[in-house]
Amino acid sequence: MKTEFRLFQHDFFLTDYVLDDDHVALFVTTAGQGIRSRVTQLKEDGDYLRSHVLASLAVETAEAAAEWLHMRLRALWGFPDPTGTSSRDRLSGRYRGKRFSFGYPACPDLKGQRQLFTALRPKEIGVELTEGDMMDPEATVSAIVFHHPDARYFSV
Image (cartoon, rainbow, N blue to C red; front, side):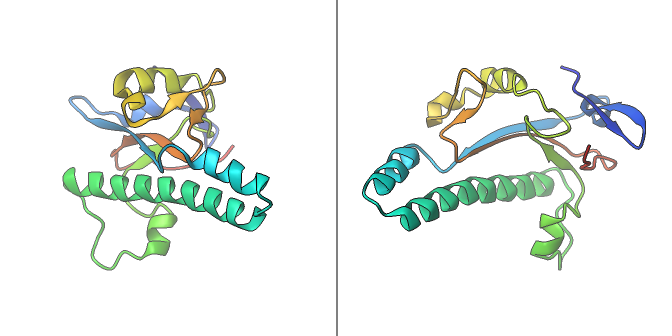
């Protein structure tokens, strides 16, 4: 699967970040099932603040799990974050390797989720794809992780 993006006026593919005999990681993290129904119930009960807080915490929990897993992968691949790496450095992507998710500039077509879901079968942990290739529950993160030293995030 070649996913095209433009960076510095040159064409690149995410697969350009894969060397011969290399490895990539695929993962799905989630805050779990039942969040949406609980958020909906809180809204119906008029408890809007708690409904928004719960939805936000669920999304941030899935994202934190993804960030922790990515940090763990870097360590397992032999290049842990240097001692003294701050949370700000991590949140700014100041480490080797990057994780890319469908729906973002590097791979904007959500249909790529289908291949990732075929490989990982996250239905076993309660995560499914909608007809529009969005993840359900919403508080879920999927990613492809590359450890190539030149991998970087970019914007369109």
